[in-house]
Image (cartoon, rainbow, N blue to C red):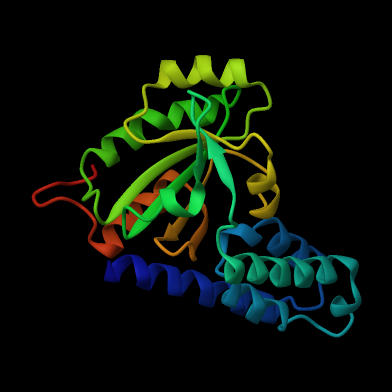
Length: 218
């Protein structure tokens, strides 16, 4: 909503001001690099250019620059043409699976990831309150052990499609280096939001008006 957008803008402006005041300090760059996934790419790009000439010769600054370039490429490329597999070993086209809704939230998880499993009940509550034509859910496991995934998959009793990325190509191409982590795409496979937390998903649902009438997330 408007309040949330104002808060985010205030946070970004505070970040710009902090970097301007401390543009020649290595710790400023380190702090930004550690929080890079919390910022939109355009904001990161603007922050990157505020550093001093000395800092711009730093290996960490180059690391940040490479990260921004790589993420822009991922976003522009969108979801790759890959297949994922269900618990019955049937393969599904990822691009076709997301066409049922205007947007799709893809939750990356694994059977061994306790924080992922802890989030599932809350995700189920959110799923029960959204307009499914506007927003679909999909869980994709990055498990390497199919048997353990199938066992955990049965236990979770997902209300939406639950699949596995057996080849791990999707995991690599989308840069999934930690979980739980969400991704929101539109029905054409264009990446709308990356590194989506449970709270980020709630914000997206609210911003886009994806709730059923008379429903509330909390």
